[in-house]
Image 1: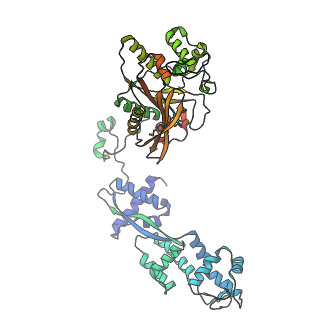
Image 2: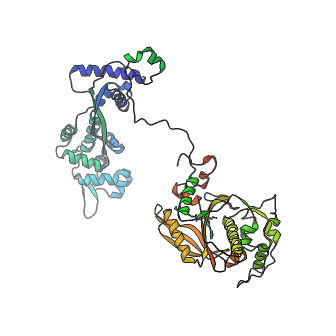
Image 3: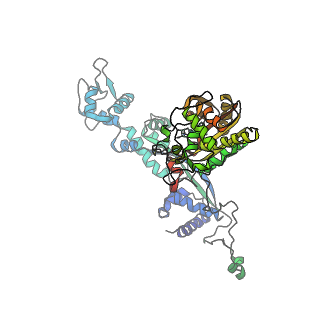
Length: 529
Ligand code: FB9
């Protein structure tokens, strides 16, 4: 039956109810009298629809229903286990009584609950010496002298529930009266609670409503005019039609539109925090770098495992950077520092190769950009004799030849903060990181000594995440080595502190993403987060 047909049928029935002068009809009775309308939920919906047209007014009501559980249905159909056990024991009479083991073997899984309830009901007695059990009253087969009132009570509740679900009256008192007839020795409400405790019955709240005539009630479905177009206005037909009230609270059509990528949302937050801390953003739009800036300028020896193909993407063409574009004196100072050290360092004591340093790679960290910036600061100092302290940051893609898994891709976005100034120490570094991480929601930090090839000392950073309620690794940090800074011609008392983290890890935590692949490609969770 279509909704309009059902609505018209309902209107006719309501017309008859309202005209009869009787009590207002309710959805339970309407549903019982008209099963063809598709059940109570459907009838409830039809009445709501008539209420929206101001044809009727609805009064929401609620009642508690008692109904049988699956176990209760079984006991109502087959009898309670305690009654069945009593009958079995009377049929299999043993003068000495029965031991529990033989009862379990003969009676099965229900034995424990049967014994416990039969003892409570006083149907059985146990010999204190032998622990053997037998019926107090040895009835005869077919006449156990005892009635299975539990099962009868369940049958009563089951039959009552069918009627109860169709009336709007509060029928619990009538149910009590019927249970008194089953077992006058029990208080009905206690009887019900006992059955509920044994999970044989349960209660359910039933919501329904009474239906009363409203101002615009009529036994026809006039569709209020929803769209006023030129034709309707010109013809004047709108004058004879009901206009649908304007719903100022209707939600607008959800527009399919773009969404800020989660990574970009977090990047924006981090940039805001770092800028507010006085950091300037470095120019990081060069993904391909000569190994020199990623490794050699950071005093990373050319044998370092991070420079293997297992960890780094080498560019096939052009395989080498143009060395002529780089300042020869600086390269010579880097070569000297790697081979023989100087100014207190013994260097790495190997034959440093220019060709190796000119191999082009996908940058493995944005620290290569930090190195370029620090070198420029050194050149500025050399030229002007003035050193200007700086706070710099970078957030951009870096590339690692990693084994891919749920938390690692061949690239990630590195966040790096760098502070160059005279006499900076680990204490300054801890202070800067406390400020930064507090601003992104990590109030408590712990620092663990670590090793980085280009910083000494170095620290792993751990933060207590309030949402995860546990400590997590939140980055790495350190003081750039003098062997990295001195070849840049920076003043000898200038130290540089730095720290790094990723964008992906905080983003995955923030948006509850467990697989990093959900952040990229066609599966990226854009509108969903
Ligand atoms: O981001 C990381 N964890 C993290 C960061 C922020 C965060 O925010 C909270 C919700 C608010 C939560 C977690 N990590 C660094 C730690 C781990 O995820 C780690 O397993 C993965 N690390 C990456 C390296 O993977 C190859 C994250 C990435 C990382 C590690 C170190 C640096 C940069 C990125 C660095 C550095 C550095 C050190 C010294 C000087 C200059 C730069």
